[in-house]
Length: 184
Image (cartoon, rainbow, N blue to C red; front, side):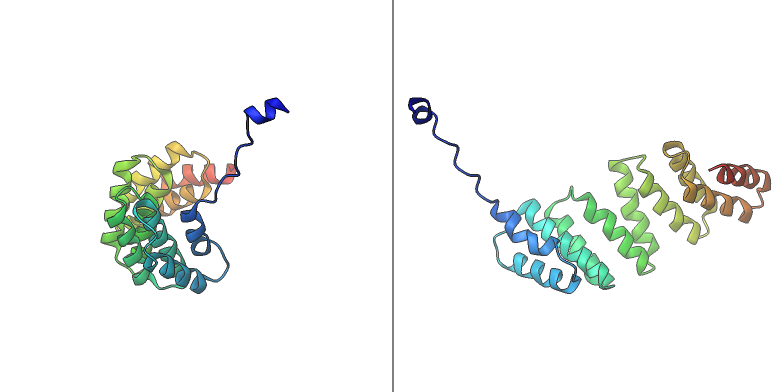
């Protein structure tokens, strides 16, 4: 018809070549195969900026699954050097540092994340756990209290608070927190 001639059909959307390059890097069950796919995507030269950072992030995630924590840290650091706003890479690098017992560096990354999102409960909880491991119980309690302000019914956070209160001999505080846990 004449109307169809005036409004030709919209051509089918072309697949995003970057997404196609990253797909094998991000998907699949085998972390070793994903790491290889990411390496190929990175060395292929077709990725730049956030896409290149994503490839490093995905490869780092695969390395974590393979328990290759130093390789993961290297990849997360490369992702951050390409894209300084890659908060997933920063968060995952902190967790990898913690796995290697490099708590000071993990806390440093969590601190950087908290400058971006000051009251993020996951970041605060993870930092609190590291402070507790270091024996900085009051600092850990402060972080856990902030988590509970955002997520008042978070059972795991309350249990951590109970444990720290008991360790510090704050039995009344522990009892109140434990009673709330039992209510939950």
